[in-house]
Image 1: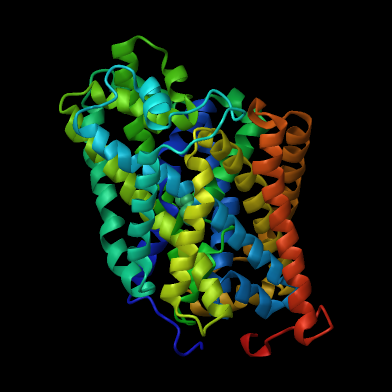
Image 2: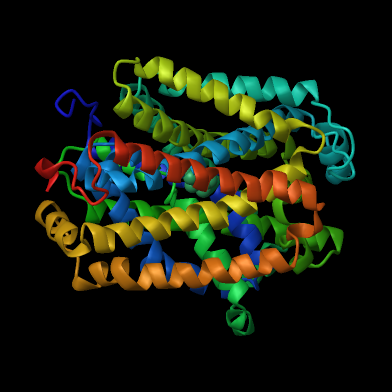
Length: 503
Ligand code: PHE
């Protein structure tokens, strides 16, 4: 099977695809909103520091796992030890849950591409977003309905995603050649537009001016860390799957640095776009910049449409903006699907990859229906919170722990250095063995304590249990059962090293 495995046509395409996965909605609205919420420039410092301390080491770990084992998340873990396969399944579950809601946000972007043509939100984008687009209920307790336009947009998004990836690496390669560079060009155009607006300077100063007081807040550090994981697509099995389509002798370290730095650069660039436009909006509307910047998940769909409608050539730039979001999101979404279908195909190679992709798209579409209901935005918020904190962080913690101690890290580090142009220092093994697991355990328990004592976002208990705790419990349960079944299958020894040929 290793011989017939699909391959990226070139290193550039691999890097494009990985950047395409990393750069998405997370860069355009999540990053700037966190910057606004956590004190402007103060967020940038932990973000950049943690990128180098956690993000890049874990990205290298995922690429090397995929490349060395030539398998997706589950298969790669299984090749180290059968009992670890559940961790891979956990990563795949994270991909599935995120794909379900990510596609819904993409469906909103698609609708906004059309609404932009005549600036349909008028003077009140907030009412437009909640009442006309989402037809949102005032709480999750109210009856749920699915607005047909959101449903239709969701169907369209999934059809596009399916056709982007149905031929696996080949079609992904063709698509990312367009969907990766084009949004960057669009962002640069928006930036030029943004910085030439009156008031833009105030927004930019707010963006880069540090507020050192905020650094004492542990929440800032947690937010920075989860943003890095989400943005680098680490902990989802995506980068393992992408690495598995590389030749075993391909360079790893330099590619990982290029991908991580590009991702951060695009996040910083979109911050410049957002804050220059917000500066202009604050000037026009008389509202405070801090308040506008911290408007949260609504930033892209409320503050932005409003800001865009204030600038000359509003319709044109609005279509541009939502098209950028759509293009940035699409390669992130299909990387999530690829992570799942690669793993399924590794396990059941007798089923055609196209068919597996179709099943994954169909199930993710069905799973996402709950987020299209009139209470969908509340469920989306809860799911995002629980999956980014407990799902991704737990998977990353277990991954670094088992590679650090089970493989062990020093051996993998030697192998990485054999194939890579840039060499890893001893720090990498130390980070994977001690630093990353210890810090992540502290992070997890702090978050757990907070969530157990104060219900997240003030939502009703049943909604938090249904969308948060039960999703996470299901993930843990499936991981454990799968590990147990795989361990029992051929060997009764749980510490049996499965495939020596990969040593
Ligand atoms: N990294 C993407 C973003 O920033 C989201 C994503 C997460 C994509 C996980 C793939 C896997 O929007």
